[in-house]
Length: 167
View (tube, helix red, strand yellow):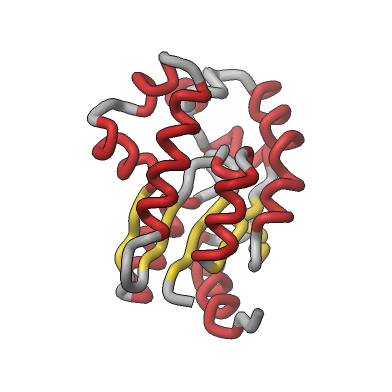
């Protein structure tokens, strides 16, 4: 598979792992949130200020654009990409989808929830998102990786799984 998509909760390590995969595999990384801000000319917060649906529509459009690109790429998606079944179809049809599974307590300890539009310094909101999305992530992925150890080990595990994956 030429295209890999990283999915998982906000704070699970998608962006950091994506950068490390980009370096180790010499494949370009596209952070979908960055792509959306360039595409729309607005920040994620600005898009969310007009409602979550507004942001999700932009996210879906960006995902379709990225899926149509030629060549090998790694895409780090936003945590809510799996909420739309059409997005899941685009992901599964065009990418090798890797679910980075990190325990919610570890996520809460490490992330700045104030900078996350749907969390805003609220552990209960994080737990609710986790409960709402966990099965969606599992259903969307081809590869399920636990992020429980040092980040370099997680990256090496992902590389091993990508290289050995057979549909």
